[in-house]
Amino acid sequence: MERQILQCTEDMLDIVAEGRYNLDAQARAYDLMEVLMELYDGIPIPENLSEAAARFCCVYEENAAILSLSFDPSALKEEAAERLKPFEEACNEARFEAAAAASLHEFAKEVFEIWQNSGVFARRRALKELRERAGFKLESHRIGNYVAKTFDLQNAATARFAEAQQAVYRANVAYKVKPEVYGLIAEILIRS
Image (cartoon, rainbow, N blue to C red; front, side):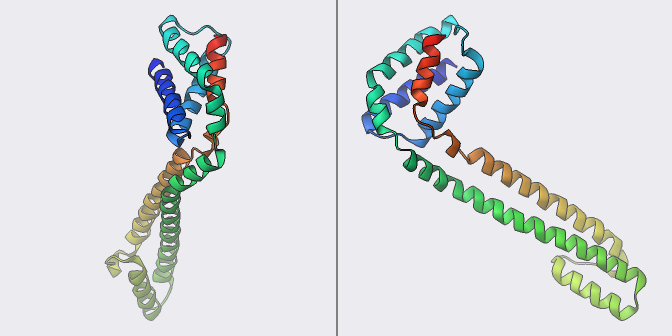
C-alpha cells in the first residue's frame, strides 16, 4: 500500500511536469482510490502509511489547480480505446473460431446420422464434405470419433474465446478515467 501511495505521488509530480495525465498514472490512482475507499474510508490509516500519506497530501495541495487543469478525459479515453483495439480484435477472431468449431461439430453430428441411416453414396458424399471442412484426416470406419474430436475442438475454441473476452475486460480501463481522483485520495487520507 505504501508503495502505491508513493507511486501515485510520483505520478502527480510527473503530471505537473508534463502538463498532462497519462493513462497508466490515472489507472494507478483509480486503483489506489478504490483500495483506500474499501479499507480506510472513515477508519484511521496505519502508522506505517502516515508518512507516505502526508507526502501525498502535501504534493496534492501544492498542485491541485495544475492537476485539475491538466485533466483531459477525452484524450485519456481515446488512449484507452487505442490500447483496447488489439484485445478486441483478438476477441473477435476467437469468437469466429469458436463459431466455426461449433458449426463443424454440428456438421459432424449430422454426418454421423447420415453414416448410420443412409446409403453408400450419401455416406461418401457427407464424409467427403466433412473431411474438407475439418482440415484433418478422417477415417471412414471411425466416424463416431469425429463427433467427439470436433466436440473437443469446439470446447477448446470456446475456452480461447472466453480467455480473449477476459483479456478485453482486464484491458478496458476507460471506466477509470474520472476527474479529481487524486483529490478523492487526498480526502480519504486526510480523513483517516
